[in-house]
Every structure is written in structure tokens, then in C-alpha cells.
Amino acid sequence: MKYASQKVAYAYFLCAMALFGIQVAGGLLAGWIYVSPNFLSELLPFNIIRMIHTNALIVWLLLGFFGAAYFLIPEESEREIYSVKLAYIQLILLMVGTLGAVGSYLVGIHGGREFLEQPLWVKFGILVAALIFLFNISMTVLAGRKTAITNVLLMGLWLLSLLWVFAFINPDNLSLDKMYWWFVVHLWVEATWELVMASILAFLLLKLTGVDREVVEKWLYVIVATALFSGILGTGHHFYWIGLPGYWQWVGSIFSTFEVIPFFLMMSFAFVMVWKGRRNHPNKAALLWSLGSSTVAFFGAGVWGFLHTLHGVNFYSHGTQITAAHGHLSFYGAYVALNLAMFSYAFPMLRGRAPYNQVLNMASFWLMTGGMAFMTFVLTFAGTIQTHLQRVVGDYYMDVQDALTLFYVMRFGAGFAVVLGALVFIYAMLVVRKSEVITPGDATQVAGE
Image 1 (cartoon, rainbow, N blue to C red):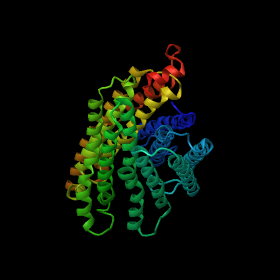
Image 2 (cartoon, one colour):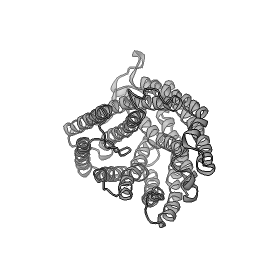
Image 3 (cartoon, rainbow, N blue to C red):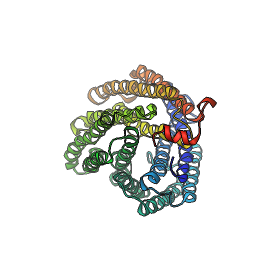
Image 4 (cartoon, helix red, strand yellow):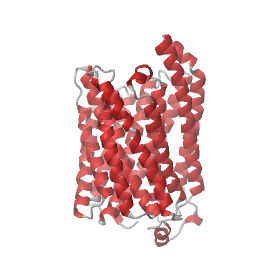
């Protein structure tokens, strides 16, 4: 760690990991309700559990992104963060908003729009926090060195924050409502978040492999161009059946097919950089998570996304467990694993230590990745059966759900493995034995800085 203000990232990462634990626990509980539908039905209904699960996911990923920005931008810009105080104020706003939203959900107060259920005051709080972040980071970058990594990261985070404005627009017309809703949900995860992912991945590979910056930057610009080209009009695959003009079926199908390209490029980029670098970096866990993130993202967001993105297929498959399979694997690969890669890289330096608990850390990677892969296969088979029985044969929805019980049991088992892996990861990050403590100067040298 070269700059004192990078320490602010530590607070963001700790809050993110706390919400990560809540998120996976909520997911496991929701998975059990699929097996036993009446479990906690009066005390804590499924729709509330699902809100907590999905909202905690989004917030902890954002906290991870913000923390990553506060960690890497000082190194890239070669200067301290413009205002550490503003960074802490932003974190407090986000955490108060998160706790306020969860409290509101528990007493039945929510907006009703999936992923955007937050009460209005929480939405305003998130907007204020985003504006503080943009000001703080922009002032830091403008006053320091400009690199491709900071440019792309700043572009992604600016667009991410500005798109949040559509969360406030809730027209009476249902088609318009869903259209604006997807402007947030899709253009976040399949456009602007991809820019953030690409820039953080580029930073990690630059540090872990030792490849020349020029090589990394060339790949980064190509990935960004393909992500924006495919992701913006790729929003059309959500416009098929919401009452918009029929041409969206072709626009959505064509550009969604192109969405596979940036994820394939990111996977190729990661492995080519490691091959070119041939550097024996001591932080093997961070490298494993970086390679794993790009690989699983390609399969989850790319391959599994393509499986049901063409409108002729989506006509039958939308809203089934195939969607859940795609959603789980893509979020895990593209954003969860990436954040965990950043935590694995940054934590030793933030705590003034050499990379530690790497065997446990890598074991958590295989537990979580294996569990998520098995869950994806189980949900894919369940969704295929559901599509046939429900959309082709015409069986009743609840009869089909009863037929899928075995798959839901297996999904719960996979979820248990993911939760176990998450607990192992948190332990590996936070618990350090005395024998692993070294001086900050040695930690910096070992970390390859």
C-alpha cells in the first residue's frame, strides 16, 4: 500500500463482507422455502427474504466497487484521495440506507419494484452517496495521472450512478415502467458494471502478472468497446414481452448474441496476461479468484445468457428456472468473484501483512464455485422441465413446481456449499495467526508493490 488514504477501502471491504454473509444466508433460507413452501410463511414471507437477498447482493457489490476505486485510484493517479472524510460520509450514508431499507422490508414497507424496492428516502440517500463518490473520485483523477484503468473505471462509475436516476421514474403505464426499470437493472449489470469489472480486472492482472501497462490497456479498450456496443442495445432482450414494438425481438436477439464477446475477451485477456507475465507472484489466491471470475463470468453471463436470449427460445423459457440459473452464475462470476479477488489482493496490504491463509482462501474458491456450478446445472435442468411442462404441455404452475421438488432439494445442497465457502473466505480474510504477522515494509515487498 503506497498511500495512506487507501486505508478507507478497508472500511468499505469490511461492510461489504458483512452484507455478503447476510446475502448468502438469505439465499440459503430462500432456497429452503422452495423445498418447504410454508417455512416462516407468516413470520418472514418469501417475498421479504428475496428482497433482502437481492438487495444485500447489489449493495455489497457496490460497496466492493467503491472500495476498489478508493484502493486503486490513488495508485493509478499517483496521489491521495481528494477527501477521506467525504469517503467515510458516503459509506455511512450507504450503510444507514441499507439498514433502513431492510428495516422497512421487515415491517412490510417497500416500493414493490423488484430490485428497486427501497423506500424513497433510501433512494435519495443512495443518490447523494453516489454524487459524493463521483465528486471525490473525479477530483482525485483530474488532479493526478490519467490511465486507461482510471478512465474506464470512472466512465463505468459515472454511468452507473447517473442511471440510478431512472429508479425514481415510475410511470402508470406498465410497459414504460418496465422499460425504465430495465434501464437501471440491465444497463447496470450488462453495460456499466462490465466497465467496472474490466478496469478492476485489468488493475489486478497488471499487479499480479507484471505485464506491460501498454498491453493491458490495449485489451481493456477493446473489451470496453465491445461491452458498450453489445450491452446497450442488448437491453432489447428484456423488451420482448412487455408491450413494446416487435422490432425489439430482432434488435434484442442480435445484440444479445454479441454480448458473449466481451466476456470471452475478458476470459482470454486474463489467461493471456498470466501466460505473458510468467511472474511467480506470492498472492496465488488473488490470481485464482481473478482467473476464476473471468472464466465463470464467460459461462454464466455469456454461455448461459445466450442459451435463452434469442426471442424464439425466450418465448418459452422466460421467467423459468433457466433465468435463475443464468442469474446466479453470471452474478457470481462477473461481480462476486471479482470483488473477492480484490479483497484477496488488497487485504494483506491494508493490514500490513504478507498474503495469508491462502490455502483456506483457495479452498473457499472451489467450494463456492463448485456449489454455484452445481446449482446452475440443477436449475438449468429444472428450468428445461418447467418450460416443457408449463409452456408446452400446459400443466398448472403449482403442479409443475411439485414436480421440481427434487431439483430444489439439490439446489439447497448446492447453496449450503456456497454459504460454507463464503464463511471460509471471510475467516481467511479476517483471521490472521501471529506467525503470519510481518512488518508493513516486508508486506509491501511480498505483495509485489
